[in-house]
Amino acid sequence: FPFHEGGAVYTRWGRTNCTDGIHTELVYRGYAGGTHYTHSGGASDYLCLPRDPQWGSQNGAKTKYVGEVWGAEYQMASFPFSLRSSGSSTLQNHNVPCAVCRAKTRASVLMVPAHKECHEGWTREYSGYLTTGYKNNVARFDYACMDAAPEVLAAGHRNENGALFYLVEGVCGSLPCPPYINGRELTCVVCTK
Image (tube, rainbow, N blue to C red; front, side):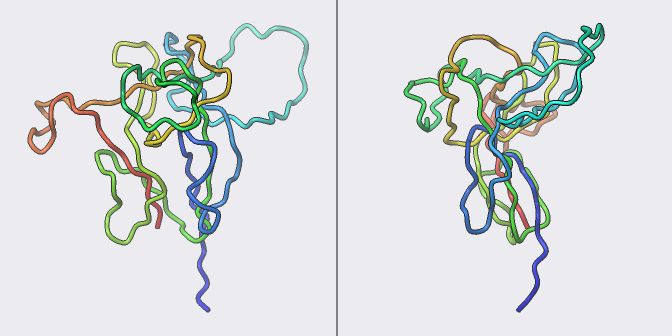
């Protein structure tokens, strides 16, 4: 039989599981986090932090100069996501879960913005909406594909801020319209091959 080498790893933002248990496996479930939206320094990417942190040695003294990791919240008050197990009609201020997944037989992973389906020859892992930080906030964030049917973390609905996920809209000008539409939220899809 043909040997397939795989192992493409991706983060499924907004969910606690992977697409299926046949072609993908869950590496770990976690909490989305990142730099606080008001900080001008620090990292620019979102993290999927494991639910079971392992600690190294501590020197007991408070270090003066550090980076910080904050939890993440949805900032999507009225967007009509297909809510999963939230017990709420809105995602606003809920904490964001994530799952790190591995495609067992596929070696490449690609997030395609402004698409809901993968290109020919690629396999769709999940689709949703493109997110990043708010345009007027100080901190910068990578673009992340938020699952179209996001879940929320239990008891995580207070407005505590931290790293924030906002929807991304197209802006006409240097971005050609058509085919893009000014002010329309962009979709995304995560594909493996």
